[in-house]
Length: 83
Image (tube, rainbow, N blue to C red; front, top):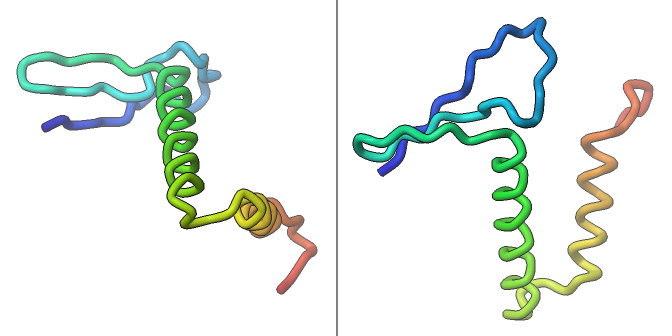
């Protein structure tokens, strides 16, 4: 079992991608996880999940691209846009 805690850096300080993002505790051991490692891990997991879904024919690549465009529009619309 592992426990994750966020690094509580000073908010005024610029965040360097090599700084600690999380502290991972497993038993007696504590490991600092950098922002770069966290991003890479997330990216690899996401790629693996997408490949599995496509290989198992649960989704089509075009469906994924369409949904990504929908999510992008939903998340990055300008304040002037309304539904």
